[in-house]
Amino acid sequence: MEPLVTHLREIAAAHADPADLAKEVLKEAEYFATNADRMRYPGFREKGLFVGSGVVEAGCKSVIGSRLKRSGMFWTVRGANAIIALRCCRLNGRFEDYWEHDRAA
Image (cartoon, rainbow, N blue to C red; front, side, top):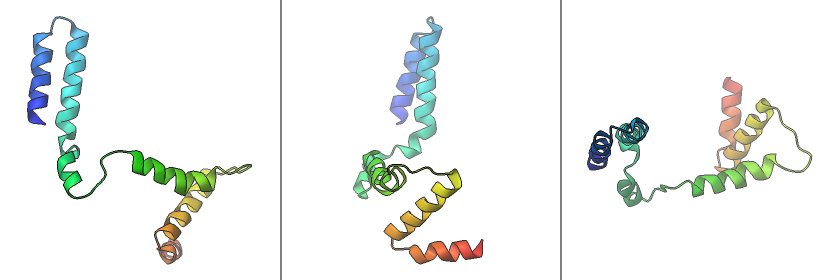
């Protein structure tokens, strides 16, 4: 990641005349520098972790969307959060945990 950040900063310095380009390139360099720890994709893949958003998006669609977006349904934020928590606990095999947490609160 460090070579990429260095190269982006060099590009920005070389094109310092058009201020907008330099500012944009520096912004991207800072993004990569700040988030380098989150972008260790080869290591994540070695551990069998997903690095794309597709799995999460599909999970949201099947777990949340299929339950909350049925015909004629309307939810308050509180109600939607409660049903999502219940559904996630049920699907994760932790249904009893929800009730324990609810009683403690």
